[in-house]
Length: 337
Image (cartoon, rainbow, N blue to C red; front, side, top):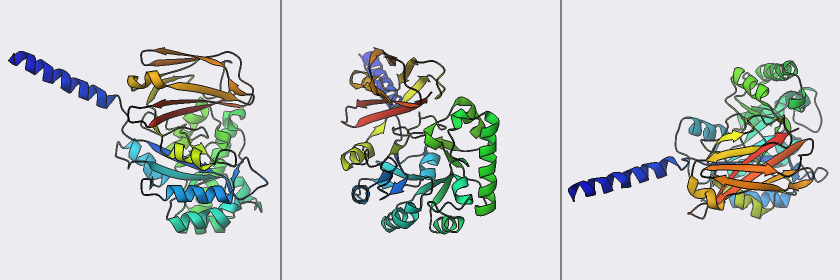
């Protein structure tokens, strides 16, 4: 009887340990804005009503709005993030951020990271900020990230051209701000394995895409997801859903290169938590809309087989699963052809 009790306790402890190991420790949602109240560009701007609704929702005490770099450092160093951690990022340094967006974020006490492509600033483009305004924002607490120099489709460039983009941008940042950013955001969210390896060589800490998903410790640090907000995708129900989502622990994702060499691609990954297998579903979209697919589940392995080729340009896969805690888990990935 004593031996049976010992074995029972052993298997209980083993089960608890296994359960803990199969669940991710941290989750964080990063939202991405471009323009504020610029109705001429609905694909990159949010309306002021939408923006005000976002601020009202995110001001609730259940959310913890944290600096993006703090979120990254906490995950890298295996720390503990608060529940419902949210980060806020802005791409391109449009003047509407300075005139409209930042004053409201500042009033709410929300930290913001601004990803700057240096060519528009350096050339004094009237639709974007100038260096005096960016220095003012930095003094007020805005963090600066790199966004290349010319905002080209980087996957279409040679690796030497990408090096030039990074070095020109770095030198301008060093001259104007006295330091080089440690965070990078890909223009259009497009990259490939060569570019990712290059960013590592240049000592960028992480790099962000523009695909939906929740950051966690299984995320690719050089292809991190963000929820893009624009007039079409900024209604408050979507923001609430995203803000309350958790990370989906994923490993062994294929294809490893975001710029595809095969079309249609074979898409597959393994789940950290096998208990999510029954509820998981995945959706693939390209410029023609949703792509018909077959979804196969083999123990912890998920395989997606597309029934047609993807269109040229950007395409995305989004996978969600509902946990036993009724929280949705979300994984996303972007491809480029």
